[in-house]
Amino acid sequence: MVQYCKALGISQVVISPGSRNAPLIIGFTEDPFFTCYSIVDERSAAFFAIGLTQQLRHPVIVLCTSGSALLNYYPAIAEAFYSDHPLLVISADRPPYKIDIGDGQTIRQDHVFHRHIGYSANLKLDVSHATNTVSAYEPEKFREGIPVEELQREIDTFNREEISRAMEALFTRSLPAHINIPFEEPLYNTVDDHWFDLTDVRQPQKEEEDLGDLSVYQEKWSRAGRKMVLVGVMPEGTLDSRWLEELASDPSVLIFTETTSNLNHPNIIPSIDSIIAPIEKSNRRVEKFQELQPDILLTFGGLVVSKKIKAFLRTYKPKHHWHVHENKAYDTFFALDRHFRCLPNTFMKSFVQGIERGRGNYQENWLRVRDRYVQKREEYLKQIPFTDMWAFDKVLRSLPKGVMVQLANSSTVRYAQLFDMGKHQAVHCNRGTSGIDGSTSTAAGAAIHFKEPTVLITGDLSFFYDINGLWNQYLRPDFRVVLVNNGGGGIFRILPGKEDSPNFKTYFETSHDLNAKSVCELHGLQYRVATGKEELMTALDDFFKPSDRPVVLEIKTPAELNDRILLSYFDFLS
Image (cartoon, rainbow, N blue to C red):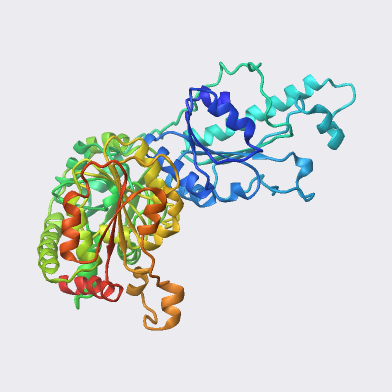
């Protein structure tokens, strides 16, 4: 297994401690080809690995022992599955004859992730090792007259084919893969050299779809008066600026992006909800939505944050929805009629050659609406008190050029959509499953391979839920955490419900009085706190300056005001 990973160039290994995985730990850590990280908490370790693969865009290994350790990987595996992160999960297991007989740290590990995995490889137990023990417990494995060496060759052939299938899913479909390996004791013995030949192992190659004749789609595009381009999660550099310019300079094309798209252009609209929310409140709602309704919807990237754009496009469906993605296409708006299985640049290079620039004022009209909401947003921010929205504005304005921003989920990523951020920063967020469970761990892993500083912007529930993301020795001194602490799940206050009831505060908002000071002391981080406008501005003055330790800035905002200020913002725009 170790040599197979080496042959394919998979060099990053995140290891959680154990005994059953000792042969793998020894194999990986004693080979200088591999860079190994030790992280105790498997849930945190797997999200840390997602951060690594997010930046490297290459498979990363997570390695654990047997039993419940493996189950703690599941949240990150689901995230990897929906976000196209090639996470290679390698788990050690007990031999088959020791499953379900009462041994500790033993569960049914085969196919445990089968609904969220690219491939599950369950390897066979070697018989060349601990032969007497294996034959005593599983005598039927040894066929009369067949030498152990021949049985082992059969096992090697099976295992190699299984590993190959897992690697195929990992490299060609960017899906997580699980390889489960049973080991019999003793676990710590070593040999001087391996006896097998892997010189013929080649990295599986991803093949893009042959787009063929696009004339039918080019003709529909050229004839359509209203084309909408919607871009979800997309790593920086995915779409060349020349293709973005080609789309943005067409007056019949309206481009909606989100902060996680990592796209910026003067002719795009980066805050979708600031356009749609005022329409929802308008007495000309139907008429305005019909004016916005596209003939053709072209989408790039992964999942979209805005629930409002989803509701709009599901009600006011485009005649055609085309999605460009090398792996998958979700029918998010129940209107998908074509999936182009290729990279955005590949698609655009072929597509733009046969299209004609449209006419009309579709783009111009909605850019004027955008300019009005930008102006009104500035007016609104000048008059509101110290709250989440005011704090987010100041934090995002203060971000230095070139830093990487990691956004936690829930309120954090939604507030970020209201502002024009990401013009000078790379922006990332775990939007595959949109969970709060691994934001800190992912940011810590991503920071390892990013040259400039990393800034995690998080809410209090996300932060305290993933405290173990700080429990490792790999946090860089230029790692920064902005913690917006509003005393609970503030996002639930903007949803319909009994906000003043004890049940709401206990079971939805989950009110608390925790602060991050003791967490920072425990993990050796610098701690700063701001509870008002002046304190925050003072703290931001030198927050990003070089330091010898990571720094956490906790911003304590008033829970009872935040929801009212946010909801009133959309009223103000209207």
